Image (cartoon, rainbow, N blue to C red):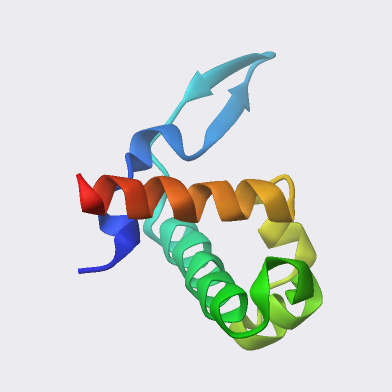
Length: 92
């Protein structure tokens, strides 16, 4: 079980449909991509710290594109917040 198993997957992705935003259950591939990026980021943050972690280094580990990263996380800060939210859920 990972930190990410405790985060509400239904709210992770919103997709515009016919001009309006709707909530839609993310596909398994999208969840795997998001969790892979988050896992790599957690390792990098642990190793070099938040300030020292670069998005390009995080993505080099996963093999994902910047486009994939920014689809799931608008910024490095939002990625860190996602991890903190997951850790907080595990602790509770």
